[in-house]
Every structure is written in structure tokens, then in C-alpha cells.
Image (cartoon, rainbow, N blue to C red):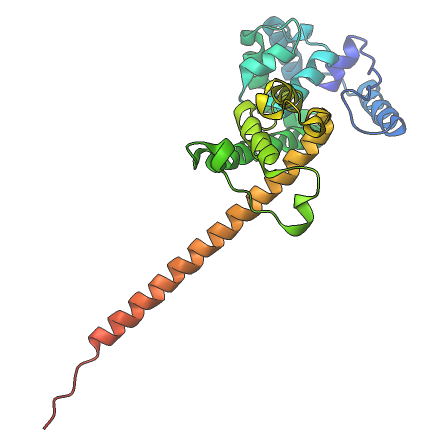
Length: 265
């Protein structure tokens, strides 16, 4: 949508709230002023742009407000650009079909937006976090499913600074199993783990663990994730070394077999 069209309808750029933009107030106001100036000084529409304006109006995009636009961008960052059903849930008053049409136009023409680099960077950052969540969840699942009874059998490879004096290995095993169960990165996951602790007979008299806050549980889970990742990295490195060693031994054996034996005269 061109700046002249926005100017023609008397649009005024609203102030961005901290909820939809992470910058400080002064930066947000500077960006708002620059965007308004670009609209106020826009050149008149060409015939093609006028025709395009009518086409967009007929498509119904005129009822998408700045708030709807921000919600759409934030939802793309939160769920990933292809999760249109989840995005539609975040854009109040819009159907899935409307979001699909809007998304198609947005991704075809986003470079026409004055601040598109910042918007796309925000979405890509969110998508990168989603990929990280998937990777960590896979690591947790691999750790837990190695054992028939993970709450009793799972071993944690502690480093000296991380074991601490407070959490026991039984408690840590429970945290890992519950985090894998509820899903790393899911909404209110540490509150749900906290409730699992309170409901478990394993910790009926464990006042230390039962008194932990969701934030404290989250910090401990992040420490345990780091230990699992370190363990996985060490296993992967060992597998590479073993594979390299086997290849070298095979080469030596092949070379030895290919050397002809000298006959004694």
C-alpha cells in the first residue's frame, strides 16, 4: 500500500507502544515522525497505482488497521510465518481465510514497506527461537527415551560447579522428564512443572523443591539443558573420533594386504 494512498485517507501514524516494539520511547517517536513525514510528502498516485488501490480496496485490505498489522507481524515471529491458523488466532476479528490472503500479499510485497528490514528481522529472530526450541525438545526426548524408567534410571553428567548443594539427582531427573513431557518453550511450562511437583508423591516432604518458584525452576531447567547439550556434544565428538580411528585402521589393513611378499631364493 503506497504512502500516497495512506495520505489520501488522512491516515496519522499512531505512537508505537512498548508492547509491540522493543525500542525506547524516544526511538519509537522518531520512527513515528519519520513515517508520518514520508506519508505527508508522498507523490500523487500514478494511474497504475490508482488501479491497484481500487483492487486492494475490493480485496478488503482497507479494514486492516495498524494494530492488525502489528498483531500479524508479532504472530509471525511467535508462531512462524507458515503457521497461518495460529497467526489468525492472534489477529482479533480476522478469519483464517482473510489472514491467508493478507499473508500472501504481505510476503509478496513486504519490501515496499519503509521499515521492512526491521520487521523481517523480528520475524526471522522469532523463527530462529522456534527452531532452537525444537532442537532442545529433541535433545530432551532423546535423553528421556533412552531409559525404560527415566525417573529411576536416567544419569546426569554433572560438572563440578553445576551440581550444587540444593538439587538432588532425583529432583533433576524429575525436572527433565516433566520438561520433556510438557514441551520446552511452551506457554507457562514452568508453572505446570511446579504443579507436577506439588502433585507428585515423590516430593511429599521435599519442602525445598515444593517451595521453588516457576522462575527458579526455569533457571534450573536451563542449567540441566546445558548439561545435556554438553553430554551430547561429547558423545558426538567421541563417535567422530571412533569413526576416524576405524577408517585409519581399515586403511592400514588394506595397505598391509596389498604389499607383495618377497619370495626367498
